[in-house]
Length: 217
Image: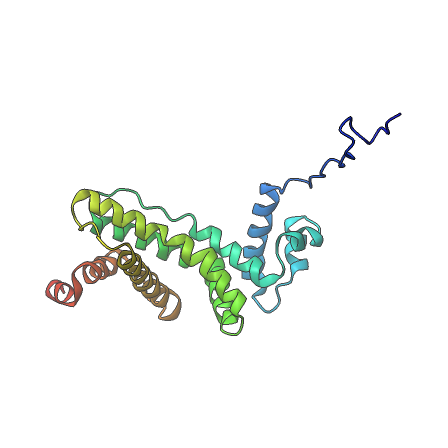
């Protein structure tokens, strides 16, 4: 007589794999929102995982199942803000650039973005894994805007289609560094306004170089 756990083939049955509880998108959203609010109220140095758990209405173990610590949590809380950036077709490459730069600056002006971004960048100077998480979660994710804008400009005939994929990727990285770095510096370091007039001159510089920007000044 065969055992209940042995099928006719004679091979023992394996127990069914147990699946964990699905991760709740609503809980994630509540945690990230609570993180941004706590940063504004408490600042980086006083923020703890316990503070975030209390504000989000979840157990602290729920946070640690998702994030190893405060650094990773804060990076992800900021990253979702930048995911709001869009690149609607405004009819020309120049106007597309102006639109997304104004959006980017508006996000940087939010108190929670200022506090969180400045804090994680400062921490990342002595934390290589955190620096890598910023790169993958924020920088690499937002390079999509450069690729999307360039592809659209190529379809319009405003830019040539690159023949060398490696060179094209290098140029895309450079464009992102110039655009994002300039706006971050002006907004968070210099604390100067990023208004429509400034953005127009910046776009001229980006597209035409120094001679174009100087001639329009």
